[in-house]
Structures are given as C-alpha cells and as structure tokens.
Amino acid sequence: MNTGKLLEWYRQNKRDLPWRQTKAPYKIWLSEIILQQTQVKQGLPYYQKFVTHYPTVQDLAAASEQQVLNLWQGLGYYSRARNLHFTAKNIVNDYQGKFPKTYKDLLKLKGVGEYTAAAIASFCYNEPVAVLDGNVYRVLSRLFGIDTPINTTEGKKIFKQLAQNQLDKQQPGLYNQAIMEFGALHCKPAQPQCVTCPLSSECVAFQTGQTENLPVKLSKVKVKQRYLHYFLVEWQGHIILEKRESKGIWQNLYQLPLIETGPKNSISDKDLRKLYKQYQIIPLNKPVILEKTRHKLTHQHLHIGFWQLKSLQKPLSIVQKTSIRDYPLPIVIAKFLDNNIL
Image 1 (cartoon, rainbow, N blue to C red):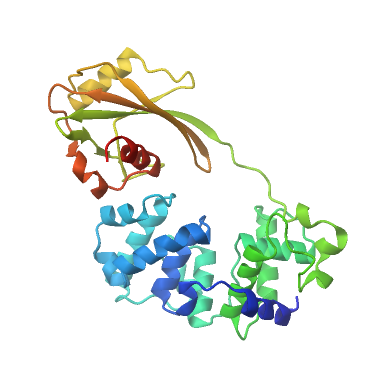
Image 2 (image 1 turned 60 degrees about the vertical axis):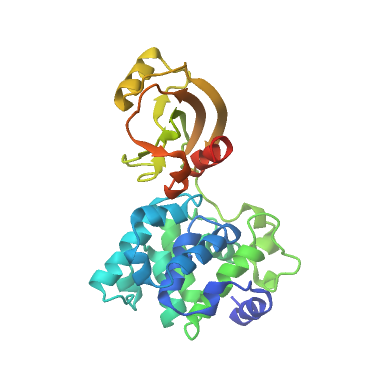
C-alpha cells in the first residue's frame, strides 16, 4: 500500500473530531467505547456529555452506575456502559488512576478488546500495533483482493497479519487513524468513491470489478422474535418502575411491569393475575392498549405493546411521575413515557 498517499488523503479529508485533539488515554478510551457499534454522528453528542459530566477517569469512577446508565440512555448495548464504569473504578483503585501504557496491559481491562487496546496504545503511546475494525477490514480486503471471510478464524488471522505488515511503524497512531477514516469516508460499504481514489491503481477489487463483493462475511446471526407487553400502572401521580435485574438486554435499566408472551401475542387472565399479585395491584379498569411498536436489536426483534392500567391501592415499586427522568430507561420505554406522561 502507498502509505504516503493514504496519509496525504487523511490530512486533506479527516473530520475535525474532539478526540483527535488529544493524546489523553482517558478521552481516547472513552471515545472508542462509545463508538463501538455506533456511528460517529450518533456517538459524538454522548462523548461530549460524558466529558462534560466526567472530565477525568476519577470523576467517572465516583459516579453511580445509575448515573452512568442514565447518561448512556439511547445509545444501546448497555453492557458497554457497565464495563466503562467498572473499568474506570478499576483504573482508579488498582492503577493509581493511570491507564496502562502498553497494548498487552490494556487488554487486561474489562471491555477493552484487541481493537480498543491497539487504538489507545498507538494513538496515545505510539506503540506500533495495528487497529483492525470494520473499516480496516474493508480497505484491506478490497485493496489486496482477499475473499476469505473476515469473521472466520482463518480470516481474522490473515487480516491481523496483513494489517500489522502495512502499518507505518514510525507513525502508527497517524496511520491507524488514516486507514479507519479512509474506510469510513471514502472506501465505504456502498458506493465507494473508486473513481477519485488515490489507491485505485493498486486496488485489486477495483481492477477486477469486485469492489461490491468485498469484504466477505459469513452470516451467522439468527434473529429472535420476542413479544413484550409493558404496563403503565398509575396510582395518585405515581407509576410502577422497577430495575431490570436479569441478564440480557437492558440489564440494570428501569422498566415498566412486563409480561412476555409467545408469538400469538395474547395476554392470558393467568398472566394478569400473576402481575396483579406480584405488584399488589387492585385494578380499577381492564388494561387498555395505548401503543404498539417494534424495536430492532442486532439479534432480536421486539414486538412491544404498551398498556394502561389504574390501581385502587398503592402498588409496589412505585415512583413519582415527575422523577422518571432520574432513572435510566431503555430508549423505547423512555419515548413512550415522554409521549404519555412527561
């Protein structure tokens, strides 16, 4: 690869992003965790919120998990936020508030995988270790015409070695940022700008008409269909809101009382009696459907119904309607409450 052309393209076309104006490992780490499985335009406001609320790793470590999850609300993949908070406390308590300075030691942090460790090590400490994300896979597979699936053991081994071989060892941080930005803005998944590409003369995919076919990724994701019924149970200016303790989606966020059904999507009288007993509800009315929606996650499609119910007596797990914003909520529930209560 003509590294000089790549770096020149980067100097002329790179986006002005706040985490590129610092070598502070805390801010680089924060940006990388936020941008995992998140586009820059969506992640940028969250990065700015976190830096404002928690300007140092010590500030983040001192926050409660509920505060961190509340600030993360709407970004999805909430395990990232829980790992972020855990690792902040780990760095303060076990590393004297200082980030590890090598790729190998960074990998020991919870939530920090090979890509994030390589990014921090190269951006902050100039360690010559290559990053490998979706953008880099795409650039390298097209440039060298590699059709080995990127999500196989063989593919990961091939691309890891190739990425390391192409790395500019003198300025690894700059090179890593350049190739990722090139994949994000120029060598895009759809409609890449091949005609104006500075690397087109050496790109195997362009020369052979294979650009749209690379990289190759085997489809392994089986999408699960789930049917969720949430109940807006109201009593004298309060509603029931409980912490979701079970593992899986939205762990440690707050939710309305839930009944999950099968694909027939119908709630039985037995389900309702169990719900009333669990929360000590004396229903004033039959549940009324207020809204139906679908919410798509990577591995799950959620078919959601929101029901309204009033209780004659004070139920369990109630909070004042006016304090709902103090609780971290899944974005689909937050939007429903915004439209129906707040």
